[in-house]
Length: 133
Image (tube, rainbow, N blue to C red; front, side):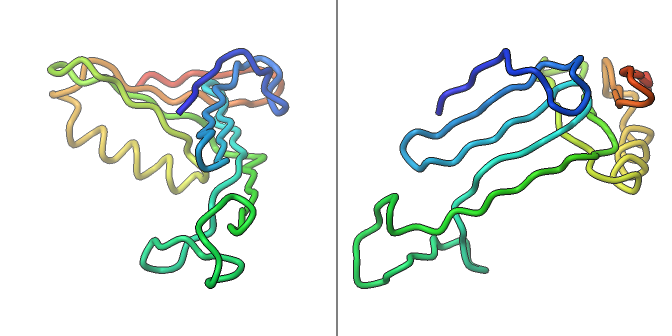
């Protein structure tokens, strides 16, 4: 797995994207840590999580795999939190307003265990940060 920083976000222009590439599989994820913009390429899998091959009589190789592209052009924002114990923070995009409400509710329930929680979002040409804890 290779992780790179430095890609300018095509949505907010302000943010810096993180690019995660798996050279073995060809999967890729681009994520803006400021506004939550996301795009990438994933291997297509069935309901059980198994890779779907173009030709099941041929071996598992990059040219025998279906790839699906995705893009979240207008996410609600980016959520992050840091626990008081453990010291490993978490960051993830909020695709919808409903995701934001769910995040706020979960933070409210566990705020005594958190050092920090916030949501950043792109509105009217700037990044706004809402501190929850």
